[in-house]
Amino acid sequence: MPAVTPVDVAESAFFVVACDGVGDVMTEEEVVANVSASLHTPGLGVSGTANALVEHSVSLWPTELPNEVMDTVTGIVGELL
Image (spheres, rainbow, N blue to C red):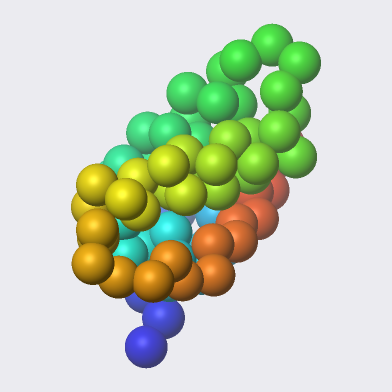
């Protein structure tokens, strides 16, 4: 079952759509912190931020779930302007 968290759009600057491969190794709060930090990196943009989120999630699999086969890890980041 997908995790859906409704928020007041006026308070949010971005949204994330990610598969369970991200959610298996990161909490919602960790995803928000990761994306927020990446969006503030000059030149990274939303595409680079999504890539950074996926790469970070992939790097966590060996330590967070060492006995599991890595799941599909995908993510989309959108910035609300």
